[in-house]
Image 1 (cartoon, helix red, strand yellow):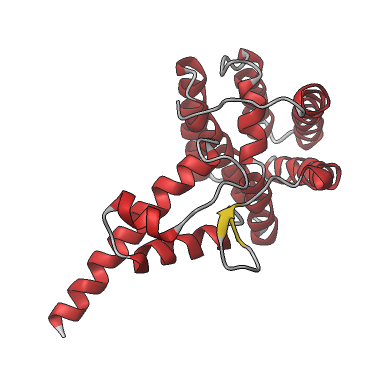
Image 2 (image 1 turned 90 degrees about the vertical axis):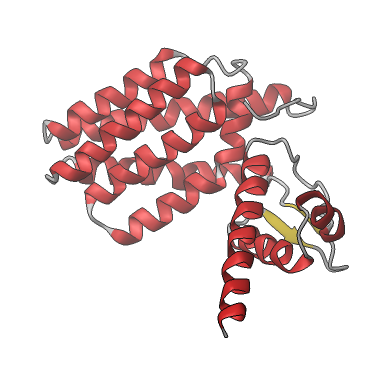
Amino acid sequence: MQNDAENVRVRGSGTQSIYATLRREILSMALEPASPLDEVRLSERFGMSRTPIREALLRLAADGLVTTLPNRNTIVAPIDFANLPTYFEALTLMYRVTTRGAAGRRNDAIMETIRRHQKDFASAVAKRDAYAMIEANREFHVAIAELAGNAYYTAFFAKLLDEGRRILRLYYSTFDDRLPRQYVDEHEEIIAAIEAGDAERADRLAIAHAGQIVRQIQDYLARDLDRPVAIGLS
């Protein structure tokens, strides 16, 4: 019984390591959309049996990052550019409803978390660490949603932000990962509006923040979608 428990623990650790590595590579675009994920090759790469490989791929599939084809081959999930207009509409709505809602509530602990994620975001921008920018940006906005206090909004917004990570990665690449200070400043303004309890200003800032990101991504896609973009880990 003890050996069985130990095997499960070791396998679980291996699954987490594989999952974290592949997730980072997918989100950073080191593994490009539609790239094959062969269990045998992954097993050789990580030096593990196919069981933790398969479990890691199942977790990635639940995240929407990998897809199993009818022939049972697994690939990195393609980016669904066709549905971007409706995605942007939902994303903008969630920026607004969570930021506005947060301005009507007080919670010092969550505000401290928001500030910490903002500090991480500013540091990532200064270091031109695109992966860290994406992670910190996601956590910053999810923390604001948590402050707003509607768990359904928080879950939905987190899902939208996760789905948009690779689009954001493509966008950052257009700046050669030199993200303008404007994005850091906009976050600071959002924090100030929330702390002041100014829901109307928080809403206006959320509209502007979401709107300029959407416009920039749309411009990039219209201009550069037909050209390959070489993107790797920071």
